[in-house]
Image (cartoon, rainbow over all chains, first blue to last red; front, top):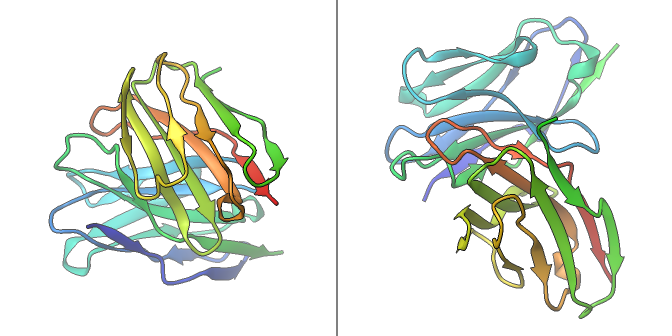
Amino acid sequence: AQSVTQPDIHITVSEGASLELRCNYSYGATPYLFWYVQSPGQGLQLLLKYFSGDTLVQGIKGFEAEFKRSQSSFNLRKPSVHWSDAAEYFCAVGLISSGSARQLTFGSGTQLTVLP
Amino acid sequence: EAQVTQNPRYLITVTGKKLTVTCSQNMNHEYMSWYRQDPGLGLRQIYYSMNVEVTDKGDVPEGYKVSRKEKRNFPLILESPSPNQTSLYFCASSLGRDNSPLHFGNGTRLTVT
């Protein structure tokens, strides 16, 4: 069965600093990979996704993520964090063999705090 | 506006009292799913539905029921709630095809005493 590990439960950065959130997955083949963001009291919003092709994907709000097959990783990055980026971030893995990403496995999340 | 609507947002109930959390989407999505979110565990899938009258178990289906009589609605039913079902619940939908992202509702916070 696939699994997703987000090793950092909580990360604190200063506004304007760079950010990298880690995600490692365990799956036998190339999976669908997603990053979602959850603001307080809200549902999850898709930041970006990877299915195939270019391993560096761009998302909304200035985020990007790089798929590294050799490391089974899909880390999320942002060069300059804004105070509004404070939220919880979830990495997710979807089954590719089923033909759709209907069965997503989520990581446990990383809470991001942004200092002024 | 395209959206997934869950009701209620907050619900406090007692053990054993049947309840239903409604979920409706206006995007004509084929695929719908329920998740529960618990601290340190991320989101875990309860049930999902690929289309009308087609439902299947996710990772944590025990104690829950669902139905998909119409394409837009996917209610979550707790026949006899227990305190371990206290959680934050999310409904989500998607086109169901390759690459289609999930659209989430704003969540229902359930407390079972």
